[in-house]
Length: 236
Ligand code: FES
Image (cartoon, protein in one colour):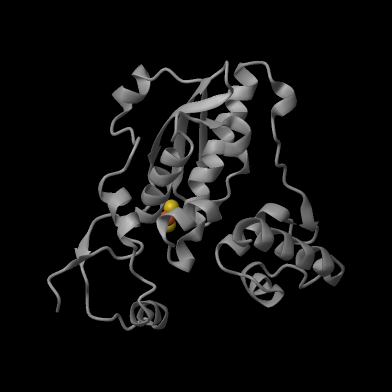
């Protein structure tokens, strides 16, 4: 076995590369090498930029917006603080904490750099950032970890909305409400969004996960439309 240290997807601490596991899914990932992180991801995981290590630092922070979100896909959480240069409407500082995995740490570290680099990014430009942009700067993430990069993105949006609220710019707040798609099973567009983020990219896969439309087939066209919409939104 190589003595080289490899970060294993799904682990929050570095461990040495194990022999291929017997679980089919894990084995396939290891053999295809998609399991391992890029050097850029490893760098941001080992040296996270703008992370707040302890709560005492968070209490001292001067910020203009704070956002906290959880991931329905894995149960992890993310908190993010932003400072905004009000004169130029630019994000000049971005700090964060997470319970998330290595992918969440690496991608949020990169996101915090992207929104503050070159003297700060205009708030509107930050809102236009997509998780795919973070992925591209990282050189990729394992497919199953895409939802981890969405965690930082959602926390940023929540922090920006909070900034709009605090600064009286309520007309700029973006509300993403849940809409019921399958009334029998109470499945919403958010459930379908999470399923797509978790890798379900066809109606069959989404149905396998959620059982959506099993009793009420009339909702299936709306489900297909949402799958198309979220695939385009997150994967381009
Ligand atoms: S698995 Fe939860 S953030 Fe990555």
